[in-house]
Image 1 (cartoon, rainbow, N blue to C red):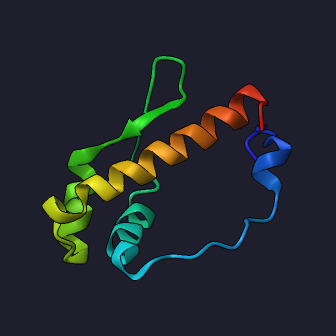
Image 2 (cartoon, rainbow, N blue to C red; image 1 turned 90 degrees about the vertical axis):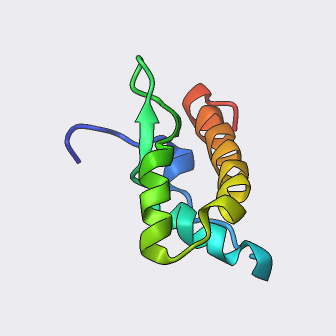
Amino acid sequence: MLGVELPPAMKAEPEDYVLLPENFSAARLFAAALNQWRPGSDGRPIGLDYAACESAARGLRVKWKKEFWRLQAMEDAALAELRKTVSGSE
């Protein structure tokens, strides 16, 4: 699509995972913020746009101050996976 070929790792079927109940609100927030990545100068994501994420939290009625650190943990994990995919070191 649009002349962009995805790396094989991005085409793979997602693995199953366990979501602990205490992480449910943060996971909802992370899912709502998936299109809120800030690009770096090379176009690769460098982090989430926290202002947009806070707005999403209000819309979802998620307590921002309570869930922010969990969102950051998910952001860090996602960035680590994205870096692996880009560098080819899966």
